[in-house]
Amino acid sequence: MNKRSLLIRSAIASAALLAFGAGTAHADLLKDIRDAKKIRIALDTGSPPYGFVDANMKAVGSDVETAHLLAQDLGVAIEVVQTTSPNRIPFLQTGKADIVVASLSVTPEREKVVDFSVPYAQILAVVAGPKGVQINGFDDLKGKRVATTRGSNNDKVVTTGAKDAQIVRYDDDATLVTAAVSGQADIIATSPAIVSTVLAKAPQKDMVTKFTMSTVPLGIGLRKNEPELKAWLNDWITKNTANGKLPAIYKKYHGN
Image 1 (cartoon, rainbow, N blue to C red):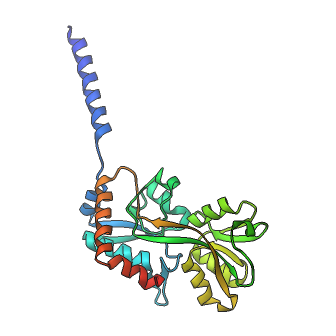
Image 2: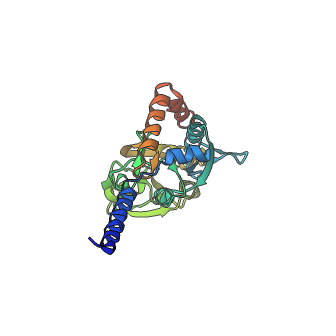
């Protein structure tokens, strides 16, 4: 074998080793977070009582408090990344956030593109409307104007179930609440917490839950292929569910 052939074979072998190494290399986001001493958590502060701004202009809510507890137990600072329902998944995919704690329901469609922790809470998807209007199921929404939050699980469920309804979408829960309070939206597809928020702001609306569309678990969202971070999150949720901390946070803001 001449010198030129030996050099070519050596170069090919080196390239193959580099390619193999690149293919098998694994980024460890949990280690990166610990090294940076900071975790970027996407939170939706326009989705009461999961996240909202109180009278003192402080971000509060069940997800906000959960996120702060998580960062504290991980031993790092928290960097809040403001998000909305439509942006939760894209913020993960583009690396703008390390994790999402923003009433993100676990669905088969979302599991195709991101990973989820074990559930840390449950959420009901309901349809609510004026007490005097008879609505017992999706069929009763035919021809009616139904408002929901764009990109939410409520949006998906009501769009699938009420094919003959006129679906009106708002960009976040806060805007949906404003629409319901102002009379722009009489029938809403949302969560029980949002119904309570509407009633607190406008009790004269006499809005009641008509029926439950679905019950789904809420998980912490993270990018695919981060087994160390996912394992830490699952262990953290399991421990803090067993010791009562996570249920207490949920009860504090949701009342059940």
